[in-house]
Every structure is written in structure tokens, then in C-alpha cells.
Image 1 (tube, helix red, strand yellow):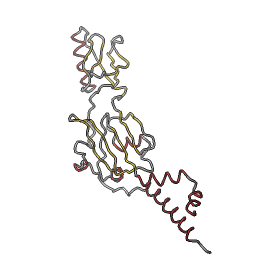
Image 2 (cartoon, rainbow, N blue to C red; image 1 turned 90 degrees about the vertical axis):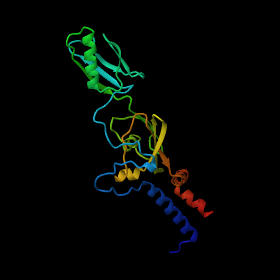
Image 3 (cartoon, rainbow, N blue to C red; image 1 turned 180 degrees about the vertical axis):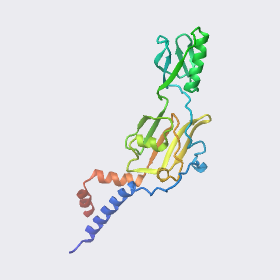
Length: 239
């Protein structure tokens, strides 16, 4: 059977285009054994950690419920911690809450209520909503947006909340922007290395912004295939 040079060229370009798209979705084999937990200073990761806090300190915007045993009039089903870190409780007024654990806040409230005249107050504080825990995920992900996350969630979880990296993602260029006391900082991570277990998968902090880079070549190939039917591409190549 005769195959023209033009036809061979068309088929070759088609194969290369499909192969390029396929390469975007390939992932390396995971490395079996303990994962890497040390940050890389050359990637700006020095302030990032693998450790999950043993206790949780309340933050502004978190929502808590305050139950005072046998005192329903003084109990609160839900109260949001203000931007100033305070909450308002009947009998005691406005008090600081941010920075405390629930146990510390319980003890503080019991002391204040006793001083206000309540006999043997018994207080329980529960966290209803970790509303302070928001992460922005942008760039080459399927569904960019702002997402709520649980304390202890990691960078890989943030990308999963956005339904994963897109087919045109440059996964070795994942930037995490974080507000530090010294100002806004950025660190770089490689998602493929994280998935292999060969790079730190850092614990998120409230307010983090994750940006997944885009592979320009893959974007160009995908745009070409989406803009024209395959046979249309062949027809144009034949001209």
C-alpha cells in the first residue's frame, strides 16, 4: 500500500500531538518507604512543616458553642470569634478567645463566671466551624476557588479540593504564598515529587494561596486540538 509523504507527515504530527497530551498526565512511580519530611531551603520551604499540631488554638472567624451546665440563658449555641479575637458572653461581657485552646477558654470562662457570682460554673466549649481555615487554589487546576479545609490538611489536599491539576499543569512549579510576620513569602513545590513521597507535603496554614503553573507547550497543543477537528487539522496540513 502506498503512503504519501504528506500523509506520513500528517500522521506523524498527529501522533506527536497525542503523545504530548499523554505526557501531561503521566505520573512517576511512588518511592516505597518513609516520605521526605524535611523542607528544602533552595525552594524557599524553610518555614514550612510536616508537623500537625497536637492542640488547636482558636482563631478569628472560628465559630464555637459555649454550654454552661444548668444555665441555658447564659449558654450560646454558636458564636463567631471576631476579627479582634474576642467573643461576647452573658454575665462576663467581651473576652479574648483567639490563641486559646477550647480547654483554656473553658477554664477562663469558669473563673470569670464564678467571679460574676455564678456558683460552681461548669463550662464546655466546642468548635462548630473552622471558618478561619480557607485556602485559595488558582492556576492550572480543574476548579480554582477558595476552599475551607480542616486543620492538619496538606498542600496535596488543597489541590485535590480544586479537583486536581489540569492536563496543562506544570506540576513541578507549584507556588505557595503565605503571610509571615515579615511579610508575604512564596515557596515552590513539585507536586510529582510530593506524590512520589520524595518532597515535603506541607501542612496548610489559614490564608495560604496555592498557584499551579501552566505548561505553555501543552496548552498550545491542547488549544489546537480543541479548536479544530482532527480531520480539519489534517486538511490544513495537506495544503
